[in-house]
Image 1 (cartoon, one colour):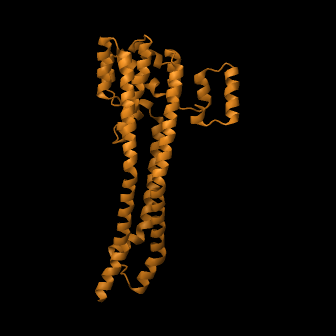
Image 2: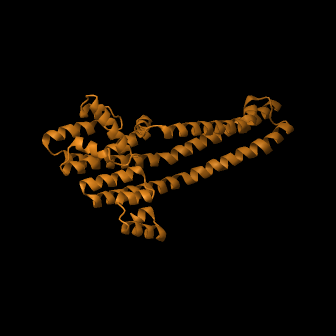
Image 3: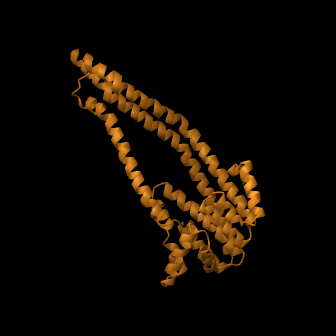
Length: 303
């Protein structure tokens, strides 16, 4: 855990001091600004007793997250430099070369491509300003939404929704599998989740399930309506109850889904850089059509 989080000496001293003061492990992680999801994992581990395995799993999650961030940074560095170069080239064309071309008569200012290129900085600036306003508005309203509502919206998005569905299916299959192996029943697990960190997704999910159960719905009906679980998850959940090996089956299924998620993320990362290169190439082609093509047309007119 120390390697993943890269604690400073001062933080390590604070950890030792908190332990000496009798701070709980979940309280310690909260003080160290870990996410509510990780804190909830630790709180569940204190219930099922397999704390060491949970800490090792959290360490693996953080290491994989850091590795993906480094890989993404490496993939994006060169394409972003190309985009920056293209942006500088556009500024050079717009404010230096284009006025000279017009003044010398090489191109006609009345051509629609030239007029569009003239307005391009204002169009781009306006779009960026509009995007910033929309982002600020939705970010503010987004934070006010319930955690469960946010996940339900995100899971509908292409690609992102698939990753979220696989992640939460793997997460709940693994955590519930450990609790079931300790002898807890599903309804007891839901009750335990209501005592977790109030900002965590598990807490929001448990509260929502309890409300639906109070309305007379079965647990199977409640879980089947959640789009952030794979269809196989509910099937395994209730078929495993019949065979009596639910805990083991869920844990194995959680590992299988986690492997599938890692494979998809790796595949998407490999496709990302070529896609960015294609976008840059299209932008270069657009610049050519907007500026150089009118020059050639004007030269043909003189010939």
